[in-house]
Length: 248
Ligand code: PGA
Image (tube, rainbow, N blue to C red; front, side, top):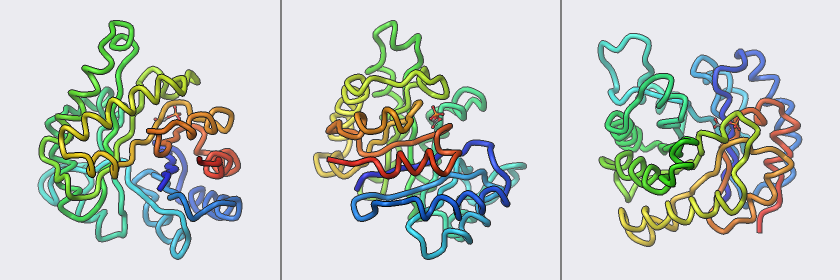
C-alpha cells in the first residue's frame, strides 16, 4: 500500500481544517492501492476526525509524550490520541529533533508507547547537509533507525519516513536516485533488525520538498512506499495532485 501523508506542522485553525477536508476529498481520483493521511496540529484533531468520518482520509498526530499521563505540562497523552481515534503518530520529525531537542532515547520510548496502544508510529529520520557532505549519510540514518527502534516490537505496526534535513522546506528535493539509495539502505537495516518480512512490510516514506512536479519520478522508485509532504500538503489542490500520482 502506497502512503500519502500531509504534515501540516503549525498551520491551520480547526475551521480551516474542516474547509480543507471538504475541498480535498472530492479531488481524490484513485483509492484502492493507497492510503491517505493528514497530520494537523493537535488542537485541530477533533475537527479533523469529525470531518473525515467514513471517508478514505485518515488523521494522524504530529507528536506525543511517551507516558500516558503525568505531570508533563503542555504535552499530549498517547492514550488520549488513541481514544480520540488517531491511528498514526509522527515521531522524531527533524523539527522536533533540532528545535525541541528530542533525542533518540526519548524517541524510542515514544515509538514503544504508540505501539503499545495499537497505533502506528511513523518514525522520521534523515541526515543534515553537513552529514551528507562529509559522507556520513548512511552512518547517521542507520544510527537513528537503530536507536529509534531500540524498544520497538517488530511484530507491531510501524512506518519510517526518510527526510533529508537539507530537503525539508528548502525546495531542494533529493534526486530519485539519492532517495532510492537511502531507502534501500534503510530496508537492509530493517532486515537486520527484524528479518526479511518486517523489512518488506515496513513502509518507507520519502519527505523533503515533495511537489506535484517531482512526485511521479520519486513514486516510481522501488523502495519508496509513500510520501510525507509538508508545504505542498497545505493546499487541497496541490496535495490532491500528489495523492493522485500514478504508482507502478
Ligand atoms: P516539506 O516538508 O515538504 O515542506 O519539505 C516535509 C516535512 O517536513 O515533513
